[in-house]
Image (tube, rainbow over all chains, first blue to last red; front, side, top):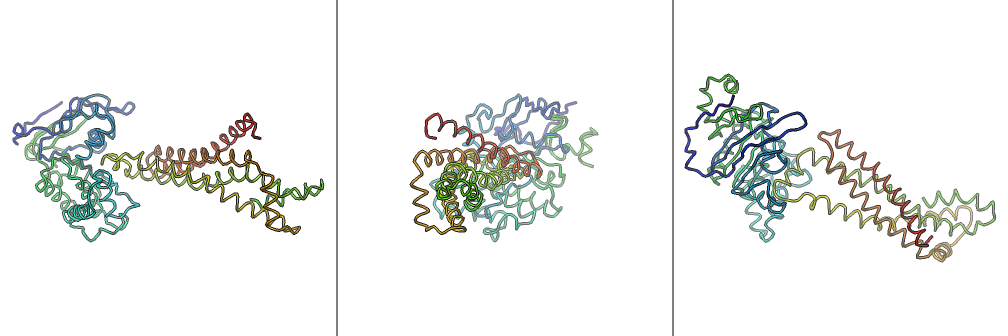
Length: 255
Length: 197
């Protein structure tokens, strides 16, 4: 059953920055995504909700080109992702940020080097002063200026998550993907990260796709929720709309 | 290496009364074969395993994916530079290894007799030709390339989990060591065909 609850938000007013149509992905006999479609509007926080192993992370990795889907189309910022050459894809990726579930900080580099690394690779002409200002700006955003010369191994889980968010922000992306941003964190830190996601959206007018099954985080961050079940978009709507649904498959997430 | 080889060779040479040829034999053996191959095998043990484990660990912790999604080509940053470094560094290490081995051989010769350093090295170098030195040096570039390539390949293609990292490091050493012997065999055939042996 595919239920599409119509969202009450201003969908038609905003142009989509990501359009995914009829996406299929299969690993062996395991069909992960089956005719999955969604669109993300400008400055929207879209949460993809689903059970563990439902294909949420596969979906987001398909969208950034880490996994190639079997069929379907993905348009990001007007470009057909699957038709791009490697250089074009890398160019597009500078407009995307990605917060990994495991943070994926470069463990042989200090926090400063982690943050400077994308700048050095993409903005060759950036001066030292500009780079320092950018690094300090993102660190101030996450409230961790004092960690600048620390190694990732010296950080707590919550701090590492914030630094990973700072790194995702360093190139001033148009779209950020958050893969389970609060997994493994205590409820207080989870709320702080969720609030930070909202702050980033408001401050930099970023569009986001947030993969999560942490309902507290979903409630804080979501403008719209897409429920991914059995590889399909089972339902979509605002938090309030889905919370009031009578469908048992939807209700189980809101108990 | 040189010391042990000298001590092993001496009894046979004494038996045939050609002990004076010891520096020549040891020198040729070290420069042509033992120096490049042993150095390459030690290099494979240290560098291929380190590359396999380091890149494997980066793969498992999604650091390579992080590089890719930020638009940085991980091959260019992580692989090319490692392969280039190992290709260029192994010949230098081999020269260093040969020098240390020859010095070890000099010590070995002096255990049972007295030979001056000058006389020993004069004997060694007088009997070495370009045909001994150049092919031996050229093959070390190929050994270095193979070690870098296998180390990076195994690391990049390691399976998920810490077991995958260990397995990548282990198989990088085994495969690159086997490849060193295969390249060595090919090098001998080619130098034979070119009449350099």
